[in-house]
Length: 222
Image (cartoon, rainbow, N blue to C red; front, top):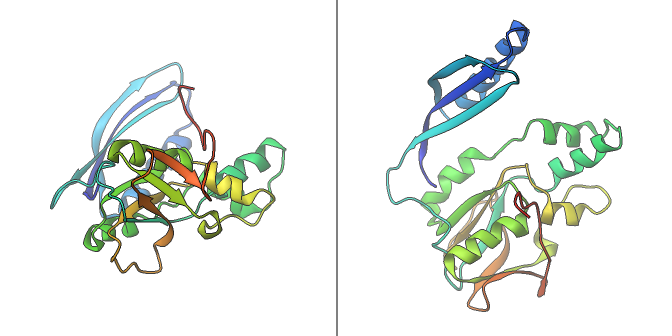
């Protein structure tokens, strides 16, 4: 939403027989990820539980208006920053008992959101933005609905992993946590943002190459 990351608070429930080394590694990971954006773990709570439970709250500071899902306007460019489909390809490999290509498995196990590209998007005039956690088509649908617009995607412009059905995975796979955003039509975008379509005034929704793409991703409540 355009905020500068400041801190994480996390509630941690854990069985009493959990290995201390595992807990140390978890805390190290939280610290290292915060360090990428200049934030820190500021506190939270630790309790005994039957299973491991993590509840995380991220805090940030807005220096201007919040970037929401409702700001897209007809004529805007649609662009993405980050990888798409790599984590979904990793899940498919793991589900078949495979561990190679290792970079795809790693993409699922440890996503690499392009934090800085999202923060720089504010200075580029971004009008709407979200992260791709449930699939590109699915998540762009949230922007289309909130903004009351139609989003048209050119699938040839969508970067995809080099695997069979890579394009499908790029359009519907989640958990890479790339960023999808809309920008004014005259915006000059750096290489970290790749234009994949446009916003139009047609019926509300998302189309790929002029056609509906069905569910387009993961819906937790479907």
